[in-house]
Amino acid sequence: MPGSEPRPARDVPAALTAAAERSVAAGERWTPPRDRVLQLLLEARGPVRAYDLVAAFAPGAYTHPPTVYRALDFLAAHGFAHHLRSVNRFVACAAPLGAHDAEFLICDGCGGVAERPFELAPALTGLAAAHGFVASSWVVELQGRCPGCAGASA
Image 1: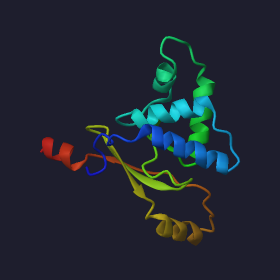
Image 2: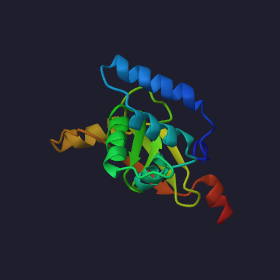
Image 3: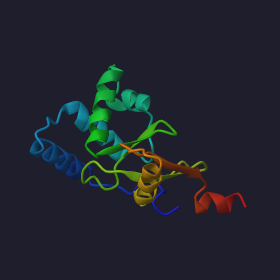
């Protein structure tokens, strides 16, 4: 699936610097735990469980899970990462330009994830409005098989 292959190598130091600068410019603190968790997400080849981040946070030393969870909450709230709720994993944002909604295509075969702009918002907003409902957040995750995995199982 285009975009679901292991994410391309990124300029991790540049991405971390940009995240720190954007956070400070917004009046937020950029802490070592936030930096480390984002680094691990950027270096990951796919979605990562929080406890895998805890284990990798400081090899050879114990890290308290709340430290990692607080960093993940911050990163997700500020558009640096996404929580894939259907698989309970996290990914670095493909386009970290601020908090935004996205659609995710998650392959059951290879585990790849494609992040796409949230094109369903107008339709879902209309559906909600037709029922007198005002949505405050969206989670759109489609699970299935990417073309590579679908072709391999055919």
